Structures are given as C-alpha cells and as structure tokens.
Length: 290
Image (cartoon, rainbow, N blue to C red):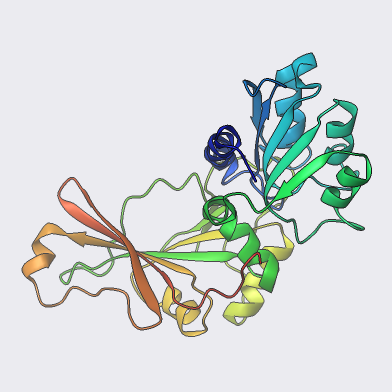
C-alpha cells in the first residue's frame, strides 16, 4: 500500500503532468516525482513533447545520485521501448530506483510492459495509486487512443441574442483549436515541434473521417469554438466528449439560453467575472483505463 508520502508525491506528479497538456501529443502528458531513500522529494519532471526526455528522465536528472535506493512516483506506467527517448524502465533501473509507484497502466506498453520488466529486475512496484485523479489529465489521451479520434471539446455561448459568440478560453491545453470559420491552429503555436503538420482548415468528409485524419496527424485533443452548425454535426455523431457553455449574466433571466442536452452531465459550474462557465461531460465515456 502506498504511504502518505507517496500519495502526496503522486498528487504532485499529477499536477506537474498537466504542464505537458497541449504539447505532448501524440505522446501522453506524464509527471514524475522522485523520493530519496528517506522519503524526501529530490526531483520532479514532466514530458513536454515527443522527441524530448520523458517525465522519468527529467525527474531522475533533477535527482541525480540521490535517486539511488529511492522511489519514483509516476502518473503512467514507465515505457518499455526505445524511441526518440530511452526506455524509462531502463533509466529507472540504471538509476538504482528501489520502488516505483504508478497511477495508470499504459495501454500502449510494448512486450510485457514496463511494470513487468521493473519487477523482473527486482524493483518493488505498486500500481493503481490515485488512478482516477491521474486520469483527469490523461483522459483526453486515453479516450483518443481508445477510439482512434481526438477527444473533442465544444465551447459555445448560450447568449440567446447572439449565438455566434463563443467563450473566451485559455486554449493552451488543447492540441488544436477550430475557429467558427473552420480554420485550424495549434493551441500553443509551435508547441508540438515537428511531430505533426496541420492543414489550414478541417479536411472534407464525415465527422468521423475528419477526426481520424487529425488523429493520424498526431492530434489527441481538439477544441471547437462554434455556436451551432459545424460542432453540432460532431455532437450528433457522438464524437463530442465535453461541452463548455458560456452563460452571460443576463441569460440567467432570459428564456433562450441553451445548456447541454441529453447525454451529458454537468460536472462543474463556476463564475468568471460577469458570466458563468458550465462544463458538461458525456454520461457514457467511450474509454476507461481499466
């Protein structure tokens, strides 16, 4: 069973992992915290983008020799293959890590998986620690992986007087943003490096074919800024995972404001200056990491 120190470290790793949202795709956003043999935090890291060091590599580099005999706390199972970056399970073994605490098992793990290889090398491994919390960050990547299309968020305004309005949002945590005119741009301009090249606008075809093409290009999360029309096609096809509704203050007493429809459940409501932001998620998420 994970200790209170390890649980606290996992929550820190989850928070750190979110720094990779919007730039890691097609790789997952992962965070890692390294504890020394006495349980003190000596290093942490996250994966920024494909081709660069993974979370474990960055955390071990920060910890240095203090990692030997210690514990690595990581949000996703250490990878078991060599790509542009070394296999993380090999880095952990070479660093002398004695114990690894994992939140979510990696469905893409090669061979028997990083956990099996670590155990074979004599490393104590515990899996499933705060998995539900880790999935708050990993959910778009896991969902996209499970069905072969990006996780789609639809944001619109419930202003009864002007449905063309869309909420002003921080878009940096999304791989790609689709404007009301159908134009595509990265949420963080240049954030993915050379891992994918986007067309200037949405490709032609059915919603599923369009999303499959974007997935093949490396996109794992997509934000659609659209009042109705375009985004409704994707929602009606069952391809929208999350809805963000901007509810202006005056709409509270106006009968025309539209909120999420059947098939979605409200997961958060908060006030932002003079309006309310309602977040709703699909009641039947298409993929779970279990």
